[in-house]
Image (tube, rainbow, N blue to C red; front, side, top):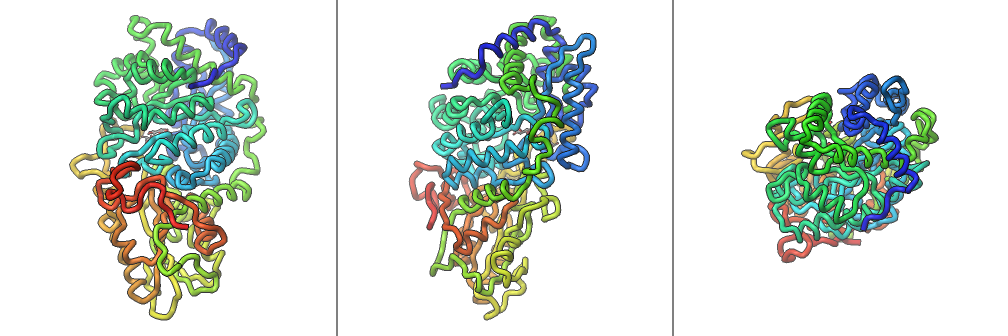
Length: 604
Ligand code: BGC
Ligand code: BGC
């Protein structure tokens, strides 16, 4: 059950503020614009309640000082006490989904799929604490995390945002993640956002933004279950999901948003729409706005379309198609979240204790990420006890992902779709850099050309995917392109998915070629897979003597070396069934024969 979120004193204050607000001010509070589409003057003139950064949307040179200065300007505009205004401090939101990874020099944690393999709720709370501090360092108050998706088909491009295919781990982590982010709410915390409500991980064939066709009992058992834990830990915000449930879009579902989430589960905080997510509700934007507000969405992530959103919502209230009581309910929730967070008492961002704090990207923070990397590694094969490697051995390091911090961080790092190479991920170590630090004699040859009989005792070949985010990471049939709208792209633009199969040898044949080249020279290979999901790697597994699933470890590649050289044991256990064939829908509880390695597998 959800707990009482708001103190009586805050409720009184919210009522007092609400009673003084004009309709324009109320509708403004319900609006969240993207930073590139709204200036501080817009915040002042239209009373905007919130601004966000879309993936990779960063001010200036993306330094802490740039972020804090930007937030200062928005905050000052929101606090303007000029005529016709009630100062209400603004909330700034970001996708800090694996650390505050859009910001240069941040500590980048493993994506959720790796954390799921760690099976360590205490670690999760510490990861969230560090993330909160690195978010606060930028003057930001709100992160769109944790993702509570329970992914039922690994072809989904957002599989890496999920802790597990099974609600058990997602539920065990949900509350701890919220506690870590929101601990000490009034001094030392950020506002968390459980997303995406609901059924995001259950779409048919794993299609991003698709349809989750399951019974209500199944929706509850698999997809709603983790939200009970997040709500019990006091999560203040929830994001609606792009997907549909049995053909009805979640963004327009009064049943799911108002009756289930706010009614049955008792959620008192605010529900935010996903990025332009209401656009898909109806061909006419005005109709879409009314549908979404009446369904129960309180704040609207409307990126560049915010002026049109405001115009339409004002019209609907005037015409009576959206009741004033619904507007008041939405604004009350927004004010209560701001009050509970102590936002009204906080000084401007630059004067807050954690702004530009020296702990950002510090060794102490990176040590937590490195621990998370170590605990997330899953050993799938280890013939003739190849691992751990000896530091004195002559080690060849190869593979396209060996020296690529961008690739090992994955999507939602610096840019929405992630980056390639080492340059943009400032700080940390690539997997190769970690190995070199542990074994100074190691030798890097990305394509394995240096492999010659007798020259090396062992090889570490780092293979896998390159970064992607959302639908662009889907593995789907070529006749089903990704439909996407954003600030830069008109609604319905078609984009290419990552590929059409889970089979690594088909999508990335270069990986198998490098492993084989080295193995044929008589050098036993340890394959390290960097990927956002389990992949069909039957051929690579057969060609390698040892095989490690490293997921998307983030900035601290050294954590991989820590375990390869035996300083720490392998302790990761699969939180996803490992597929034998390319359907991607083998899950815990299915006939064992479907999975190559079952849920929970992992060698010591
Ligand atoms: C994403 C944003 C991203 C934007 C880029 C949107 O669909 O949700 O995070 O920044 O596209 O145009
Ligand atoms: C994603 C959300 C994200 C938002 C803001 C959307 O495209 O689905 O998870 O929070 O963009 O970047």
